[in-house]
Image (cartoon, rainbow, N blue to C red; front, side, top):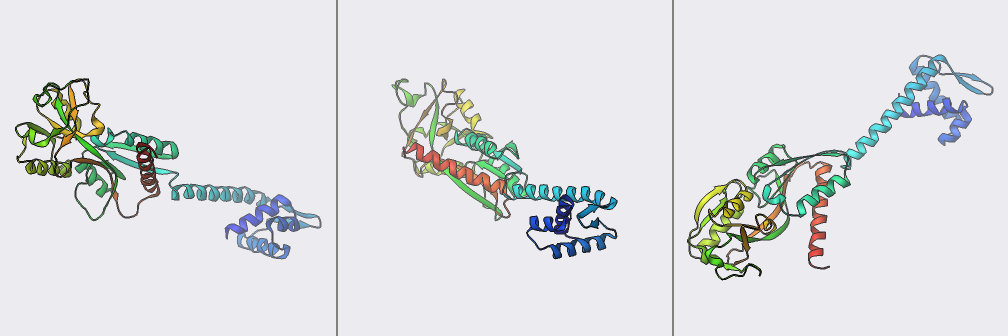
Length: 313
């Protein structure tokens, strides 16, 4: 039994006439009659009573009509659901993010835009460190992680760099290098070499190995090994400790509004390599599901739009 047999049967049942049904199906009447006869032989009973003016449904035909319509409706619904899933319109998407990456205004914009564009996709969110989210992506516990610099280079991973942003020196108000600075004016640019004796507060190396290593190298190129007072799990903790006067730190520019009353954010001069903070998507490289593909495409689209807006294009 094929689906076309069910469609033929339903059409004849609705028209009560083979010739009219054949016209609606855009086929000839003899082949239609033959297909219905084959269906009746397979079922083992007559579906129609033939008479000169057309046909009527038998008792078995009446019951089979309801079932045939139900089957065709479910097939149509299933095909629609499958199509929506194949195009990422329905499904699930698990997004992980680091606290540092989530402070960039682009990230909530991307997540919100995705939810609005694909409302039938169930989105779940999870916060974690870059290291944790990378492992979660490898193991399939998150579909995509939003983090700063990539952690590791596992063969099953794919990284999508969205942008780079400047990193800023974070100082407690009243710090010695700010002596003479008018708080009403823009903070001064500070040379990295001026910080040789300062206690640094950094995100632990396993959580942000790329940015950690770049800072160490830049300090060494400036003539000193940084004195690390604390290593913490989250960059937001960095800023809180700076505000408490525990030390200084370096954070992405998008975090410059945190603790503005007690922290000053300054540009950094003479850093080699240049200190920057990327925004990176990490996901598995094999068999990306459509909701994930759509998320990556949308992320790149909004990033490009943001760049054009910033450059005045």
